[in-house]
Image 1 (cartoon, rainbow, N blue to C red):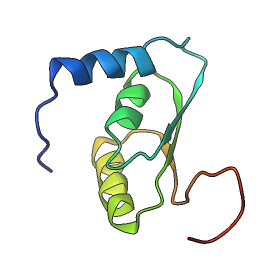
Image 2 (image 1 turned 60 degrees about the vertical axis):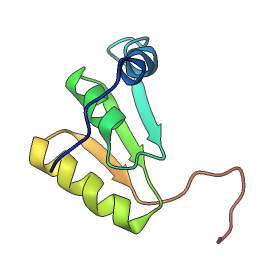
Image 3 (image 1 turned 180 degrees about the horizontal axis):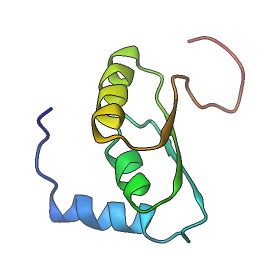
Image 4 (image 1 turned 180 degrees about the vertical axis):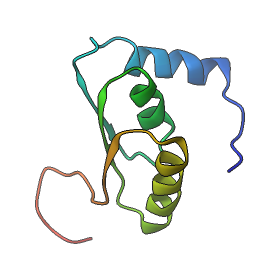
Length: 86
């Protein structure tokens, strides 16, 4: 897989999102897309749940997690404050 390089802003955002938690934290990547944040959190020994509703993105997410052998639990659903179908 080929990814675009991260900008400095991306790196700062990722450090704030992932690095600010203790090692025992659960990291939930809602709207995980291809799993950049989820995979980075997994490298920091965090328990990681990746939530992604778009089937096409889930294919890439599973490939990314599998290729890198990261212990990321993938949930192919949407996160919402109500039950329903859109």
